[in-house]
Structure formats: C-alpha cells, structure tokens
View: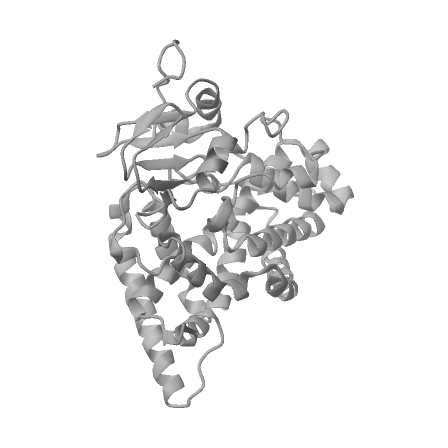
Length: 401
C-alpha cells in the first residue's frame, strides 16, 4: 500500500488505538501512503489523507458522487431525500429548497434566543460546582434549539436525542440504526400528514421547519413523505450531534492549558471566533465522509475500479503541514483567514449547510461559559464518542469554584 519502498502502512481505521487518537495514523498516511486501501470490510475502503488531494476530489463532483452514500455502506434509492444522497443538478435544487433557513443572515436573529437558552442551561448547573459538560451543557443547547426549529414538542426531546444517537452510530454500523430509523420515520410521517391535512382544511399549523418543509413546494410539487423522512433523518444528525462535539472539543482543548488558552480567551473575547475555528481545524467533529467514483480512475498511483468507496479524511487534511504550520499544535495565534481553509465542514458543493448555525451556537456557548463559569477546569478523564468516523468527547467532567 505504500507509495515508497518502506514497509507498508498498516492503517486500520477502526482499531482501538486509531479510534482513541487517529492523528498519528493520519500523519503516517500523509507522509507515506496518502491514498490507502483497507480490506477489513466486505469491500475495499480507500482513504485520502492529504489536503490538496482531498480538495481536488471534493471539487470534482461529476466523478466523485454522493448518491451511493456518505458512509462505508452502499446506499440505494431508499436514501432519497437526504441532501447527502443527491448529486448535481438535483442537489442544487434540493440545497436551494433548504438554504434560506440556514444561511448566515437568517441564523443571526436566532442568536439572542440561543444565548438565553445557554444562560438558562449554565445557570441551572452553576450551584452544583461540577458537571458533565457533554450531557449537561453541550448536548442540550443544540438539541433543544434544533427541536424548537423543527416545531415539535419539547416533551419529545429525549426520544429524538435517542434516535439521533442511534443514527450517528449507524454511520459505523448500519444495523444499529435499523429500528430507530423505522421509529423516527413513523414519527415524521405522522407529523407531515397532520400538518398537510390541517393546511388543506385551512387550520393553523405549528411554526417550525417540519411545517415549512412539509408545505413548501419544490418546483410546484410537495415533496413526497418518504423523501421528507430521509431529509429530516439527516437533519437529526447534522442538526445537533456535530455542534455538541464542537462545543465539547473546544472547551476540552481550552482547559487543557487554562492559563494560555482559557484565561486568554476570557480576557480577550475577540479570540472566541479563533477558538471556534481552531477547534474545528484541530478536532473536527466529523473525521471524514465518503465519495464514490462513477468511472474507473487513478488516485495516488492506485487503480480504482468504478464504485470504489473513498473516505476523504477531513481531520487529516486539517493537520496537513503543507497548509497549516505546526499543525499538531492548538494555537490561538493562527490567522483567521488561513483557518477558514480547514475542512471540518467539507468543501465544494456539499459544504455543510448548517455551518453558520453551528459556528454561531459554539461562539455563544463559549461566551456564556466564560461569563458564568470563569473558573471552569477539567475534573476527570475524558472519553470519546462511540462512532469511529466521528470525533468528540462523550464525557468531559468539569468543575469550578
């Protein structure tokens, strides 16, 4: 597998050591085998490690397509509706259908409510002196916000969170998500039918994305219920899980060196944006996603047959020294413009639609924590989240005076 005459690179994407800390393995891939084949699945899995190779692949959506799925498994037509499963020109139309609710201008008015929600969450734990930051702060902030955007009852948040967790785990093991997928599809179907019936009868419908997308026509036609189910399945994962990881990862790194990071940002709030972007570069919540080639091709000196599954390693691209000096150092002194070259939200036509909202939520969360819990510190061992292709802290115990 190696690109030189040294010993082959034994990269195993799901080995315990790789899962615990994938970045040394990525460094070896970039140095010795930037395009790697792994045969531990039913079909070969290829990985692309260098930023320029990843960028070139993502900027060629005619050759490297999404409709066969962004995970290791091959998706069929059952995924229709999920934005990740469309290619141009259909992807362009579907993205435009969703875009207004997530563009930078539209998310700004949400900031005040997000801050109020963050203050309520942090104020509730402040008398305790310690908490599990993932469960008590980083998780409820985006999930409650996401539920409110959907326009579903807050009483459903525990069910929706459980479903979303299972969908995320399904990126690594599709069978885990089978039953939760059926349950959430039934929930969405019932909600869509109720909203359409109410609208047809001239009755009021709840505010929120569930109503908006149920009733908004796409080129003159309402989107079929089946496609709406898949669309909301994607939003369930993208709408909160990655933002939760962004918040926990960011706080984790700032507290690893309190004096030089946490205290520095507390004293100079202009560094909040840098902290968010450096966290996205250093610890991207999504380690990578897959593309599939429509024709046989050569990649990094390897001949790939058509329909090869290739994982674009965003996290490796973000540590590429050709783009980021001292890439394995978390630094608040990086240039903000240069930082925007990270690939935490992907690149090209499939750049994450929810990036503006995720960034805004993370900035607000950090600002509120700095205000309300200024003496925050790590208070125990952290633990990573379970899905092998995602990166975040499932446990982040913290304390304060």
